[in-house]
Image 1 (cartoon, rainbow, N blue to C red):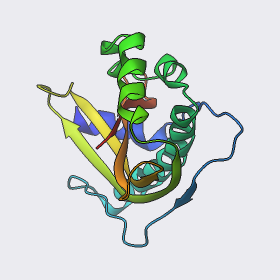
Image 2: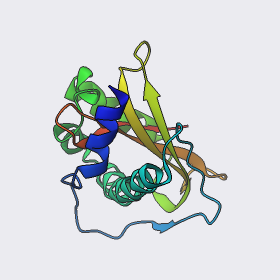
Image 3: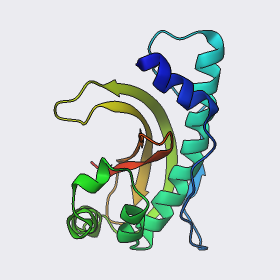
Image 4: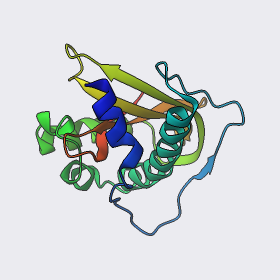
Length: 165
């Protein structure tokens, strides 16, 4: 099963993205970025890393949409995993989490992680998460901002979650 899903990862094209034109915080890639992967061949690992980089670029568009109050639009194109939560609750939680932080002024990508869930607290499947250290107007220190993707049954990576901590 993992091999079949992994093959889907290797051939799939990039996902559709939601973008709004606007000034965005300056993203910065970390030179020491880490990505943990299960045992793969070098070619498979290279393909996963390439897909992860595509999703990392997409995550900036997702973050910008969230910055602009477009959480409902993010939910509209989200994974079936994200849609286990109703649109209004998804948007309300993001609005609530972000309200106390103020506007973002910078984002620095600090990690891309890969995970496979067998189910339980997190629905079964493959996940890629992009972690940022984001500076917000009302906080002195950067806050961790996480944008996660799930490989849906149709072979397309879609947003599965957003959080700030």
